[in-house]
Length: 287
Image (tube, rainbow, N blue to C red):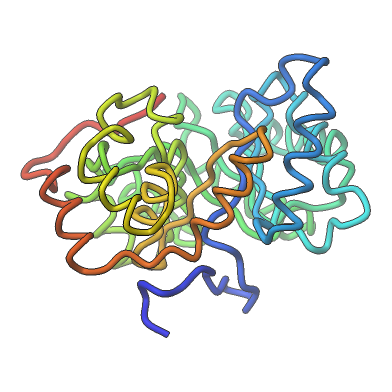
C-alpha cells in the first residue's frame, strides 16, 4: 500500500487510527441540538471515524459531555482526544483540568491530551504535567495545538519535550503555510499533524476553496463533493489527520467516504497550481 492509499495511521502502540476523524467545535452550545450531535458522532463511529477530538473550551465542557454520551458503551473502540486551556498548562492546572475532562466524558483515560494553544506558562511546566498524567495512566499520549516551528523547536529542546506525539493546527488547501516549514519539520522529527478546519469550515474561512473550478472538476470526476476532495487532499500523504466537524447525517457520511478517495498525481498537481505552495514563511493560521 502506498502512502497516498492509506486511510489509517499506525500509532506508536501499533494501533491503527483513521486519518479522518470527527471534530466537535461548536457542539454543546444549544441543548436543543444535543441528541442530534450525539447521533452524528455515533454514526461517525459506526462508519469508521473512530478518532473524536474535543476540548474543555468547546462550550465550556458541554462538548465533552456530548462526546461522553456518544462513546458510552464503546469507549475501547474510540481514539479520544481533548485539549486543555493554556492557563491550565502547569502541573497542578493540567491535573485538575484533565480530571474534569475525564469526568465530563465518563472515561478513565484519554488517548491523547493536548495543550490547546501556547500561553504564558513555560512549556517546561507543561511537559512535566503531561508526563505525570501519562505516568498515572490518565492519558496515553500528549501533544500540542497551534504551535509553530519555533515553538516546536523550543519544546524539542526541553527534557521530555520529544515525547510530544502530535501538533494540531489549521490546515487545508487554501491555507498551506505549514507546508513551508512546520510540516517538513514535523515529518523530520516524526510528529504527525492533526488538521482542524480541513475544509475551511465548509468553505466559510476561505470562500474560494470549495467553489474553485479545479475542486469542482476533480469532485465531478470522483462523483464526490468538493468538501470530500478537500479532505482527501489533506490526508493525501498518510501522515496528517483531518478532524472535520459534522452534524447532518449526509455530511457525516460524506466525511467518512472521503477517506477512500484516491487523488491522482495529475489531480494533486492541479490543486497545487490552484493553491500554490508558499514560497516564504507565513504566520501560523489560527481561528
